[in-house]
Length: 111
Length: 114
Image 1 (cartoon, each protein chain N blue to C red):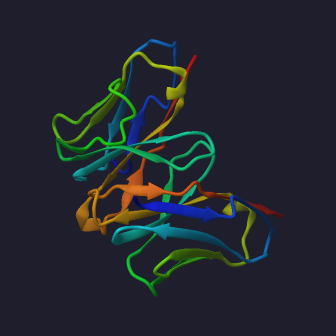
Image 2: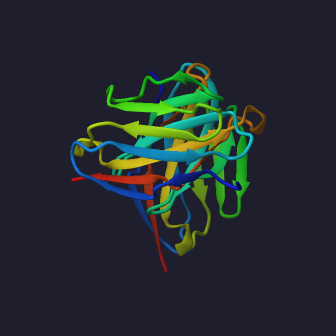
């Protein structure tokens, strides 16, 4: 069974204080690993898809990396508007396009 | 439309009442998913459609839950005889194989059963 574990559950940073969020996964065969951002009362907003170990993608202050067992979401010099819950999900080669999600990391960036 | 549209955004149902939640996916997307998200948790898979065919309904928690997509576009999730444990956000998502398997979510329908 595909599984995703995210850590930490919650993270509090000062504005400008860089850090990383972790996503550990087990999957029968990886079709893709996805990062989403979710604001309170909203649906998940797509950030990145990673397909193979060694791949990296960047968007503004965010950079996602992938190994065979985990993915990291690096946040460089965060701003208060980066405060949100960050969700990681895997899509296996079985189960059509179904995503299996972790429970998320709640990030709070203080000014 | 530009994004996945869901209605109603908020629904309060009395225990035992039937509810219907609507999803209008991104135009042209063949894949459609329903997820359930409890407070403080990640989304949990309920069911998957490819066009009008329901190919996976393994996540539906009981036979009170039913989903359909009769013309391969709009989908409806129906919950019969609602119970308090059904209170959650119901998220609809759509995707297209030509877009790298990326799945885009709507804002969700918040269901509270009292």
